[in-house]
Image 1: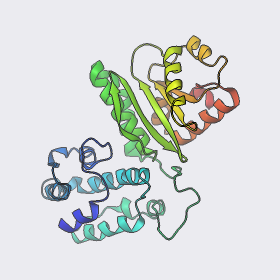
Image 2 (image 1 turned 180 degrees about the vertical axis):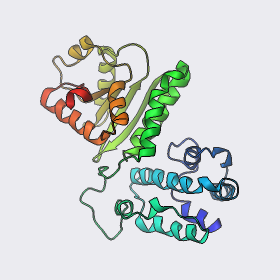
Image 3 (image 1 turned 180 degrees about the horizontal axis):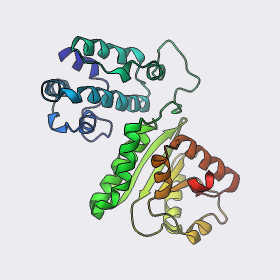
Image 4 (image 1 turned 90 degrees about the vertical axis):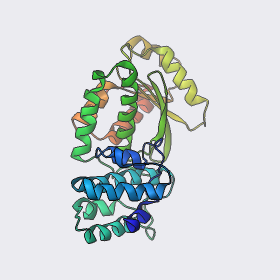
Length: 293
């Protein structure tokens, strides 16, 4: 475990405040109780040793969770996970008589960075697509949001959005800042950074909230853009008033859009791209996924 811990040390941060940290990877395989915190290397050794001894059947899924989150985290800080870094742990897995076929698939290995190869767009997330398992988890999380009380619902929405952006390699900035049920954050798409505002509430979002967020985006760098997510949707009057006499610097999505994406396995990247294109062509901040299709 010492050798494996040394290899994984730079894969993820150890802080529980990061949505791409080791504790979250452990939580995805129901083993967060094995993360003891403190100094990162000893904590990794403890996690791996405990998993191998007590939950060996989840050791492979844990390795996958660590690698997938590392791809997002390392890409976000400009130090993409390399093919060699992923292959070295596989050698130790074999010595432990553990096979993880997903980490040896050629299609997966081809998505990893090679230091001696220059890609046309190193920030492009196009090759990121959630697995069937991840897509199912996202769908279940979204459907189950309203089973939680309002305060808890905000945190669950936070987790869902982070996992959604993570699944498509959009390098979400986390943790989101939570005020009530308002969640702020950012993600990267094709090298551009988008501010995010999300509301998980009963009422429709109107003009005032759209104007406030648009002003927040305008107050940042001139190239800033924004994505406003309102789980319950937007009022027609609010959208019409917001789009009257001004150029939009944001695009919008509602809960049904997210349901369409995760339930029907649509590409989040393609949906965002099409929303952006329609906004440029029509100056409409919101066009539903069903209308786009």
